[in-house]
Each structure stands twice: as structure tokens, then as C-alpha cells.
Amino acid sequence: MHFDILTLFPSMFQGPLEESILKRAQESGRLSITLHNIRDYASDKHHITDDAPYGGGGGMVMKPEPIFAAVEAIVGQDTSVPRILVSPQGRLFSQAIASELAHFPSLLLICGRYEGVDERVRQHLVTDEISIGDYVLTGGELAAMVVLDAVTRLLPGVLGDPGAVLHDSHAQGLLEGPHYTRPADFRGWRVPEVLLSGDHAAIARWRREQALRRTRERRPDLLDGLQLSLQDRDFLAQLEMESSGMDDERGD
Ligand code: ADE
Image (cartoon, rainbow, N blue to C red; front, side):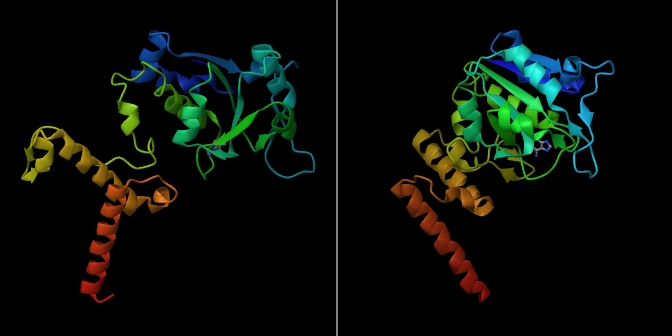
């Protein structure tokens, strides 16, 4: 998969792209990235990329011309490449959106800075707008890295264990349950016996229940609208009974 990333700060990407899985994905040819400095596409002598907002007010706005020029030079008239503006006003990024984007051979990400980008970029150039959360960063670069990372690890062959992504938190709409490794006894805290039992069906059921339990405790909103088996529902009902029993004991 290829990423074209438009930014005013290409060097911000250097560290994350040169380590670990993102580095190996590039070395194996599964991932390629071209960083484009928006400043290079500003046609004036000083390569100015921002200007004061019409109507007054604080902050600066990114000018449309360099962004249009960059996108047109990179993808031309090719409408098959999603042109994604990362901004706090976009649709909220999720594992489902990462999977959706992982199907494209190529993506173009535009990183905004300052108070925002000229609205005509939104209206006439981009095909999608993504936010990574309800908070405001100093610019879109970190958000673009988040999108790049989450999409790349879904590409075939990028992770060592191809089954790993199936069990990720959020992959099936649930948070992941706990994981343990050696030693079986650490300072008297023992690994749950079922994990040492070698009974694969019991382990799978235990993991499912832990995922359900953790999701119910931490993100009950995720359970709404999820397709759950009868066994899952029974387990959740049992948890419900346990916690209402605890309320009774406390006199609630
Ligand atoms: N740029 C600034 N804040 C952002 C956010 N939350 N998501 C995406 N891009 C951003």
C-alpha cells in the first residue's frame, strides 16, 4: 500500500517510520510512503502557505493554492485515491474505518496546521475527513501517523501472526481480555489456572468471557448493537445478577 502524506513538517514522521513494524513493512515492500512538503508547492518567492482569515479573528488559515497544487501534482485527475484531510472536524476514526481504508492500494493524507485550512479544500479537493478523537492537536501530523499505523498493521503479511488482528481490541467490537506470560507465579500472583490447562475450548471460552467482562466494565457502549451468541448473553446476564447482588449487599 502506498501513502502520500502532505505536510508542512515532513521530519516529524522520521522517527515513527524508522522503527519496528512500520520500518519492516517498508523494507518488505508492503508499505511505501512519500512525504510531500506543502511549502514546495507554494508558488510565491517566500513559499507562503498560510494567511490571515477573511472576516478577522485570530490565527492563520492554510492557503488553498499550495494544497491544490500538491494534490494535483501527486494524483492528477485520478479519483480512485481517497484524499483524506485529517482534522478535528472529521468523522471519528475507528478500527472499522482502518479496515475500510486498508482495502485501497493508495491513500493521500493532508495534514492541517494553524487554525485550519481554507474551506475550499474541504469542498472541492478532499473526499474524506478524519479526526482521531475529540481533542485538538497542534496539527494533523500525529493524527496522520495514527491512521497510517492502524491501517498498516492490517495489511497482509505486515504482522508476524496473521491471526493476531482478529483478536485485537475493537476488531470484533469488544475490548481484549487480559494476557499473561511466564512466570506462572509472579510474587504470588498466579496466572489463571485455565490458561495452564491445555484445554483449548475452555481457554477460548474464558478469553471470550474476559473480553465481555472487560467491555461491560469499561466500555458498555460497545455492547449495544453487537451480535452476541446465546452463551455470551447468558454470561452477561450472570454478570448483571452478580453486580445487582453486590448492590443488595451494600444496601443500594
Ligand atoms: N488535527 C488537530 N487535531 C486533530 C484531531 N483530533 N484529529 C485529526 N487531526 C487533527
